[in-house]
Image (cartoon, rainbow, N blue to C red; front, side, top):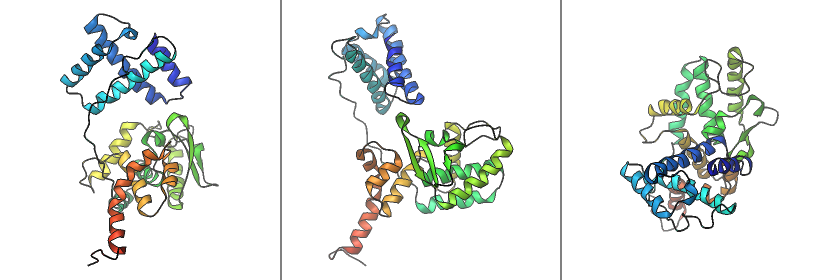
Length: 295
């Protein structure tokens, strides 16, 4: 099956994460089901763009967002590019496809005050889950790690001697992020509590039953605590990563350093966060420029 060989290619040659491969698989299977139903055929290698356009119309009619449709079509485009590369087809049916227009969403980071308010409120309880939840917020904010990276941190990835944590990023790229002193203290306190629950599990962050934490749990923790202090529409682990980058840039960190800390492969990805620093830049500009109104 072309889909299976493509997924193996993503796994073994491109070194994509299992999470990414699953997303590709779901998108391609979704198109496969549509193609089977509408055109009574299982061979999606013989597709033409007109048939793909029918799928787009079907998705739009089903109220699927343009952003999600673009992601599905991106998966399809990569699949046909692979078939072309492996000489299973001559021309990709996606060659002239243009992405659907989407409204640009500007994500607003949490303020330093909002984050400190959450951390201060989390000091009230000292049970295992409260200590773990606070550590999750502290690690996300002090490292800028992605949610998936945080979940997969192992106890052995924490290096108290060199004061770093090793994280496994996209495409299995390793990077080391400094651990500031307050986080080291929180980590040591948590590990003492954690060992009372399970000292055999390799992953750092556990549920109270001693199992590895999972995506939706981290999301719920962040959404729950930040809903108490912030009126922002979106309250997610990614917004904390966004806040990490924005606050570093506001304090004068250079873009390349932030890029390395975030694990971005190009500066273009990091520059997404620079718009959030514009308010700070305007403030500095107004204070420093000779013709600005300083009153």
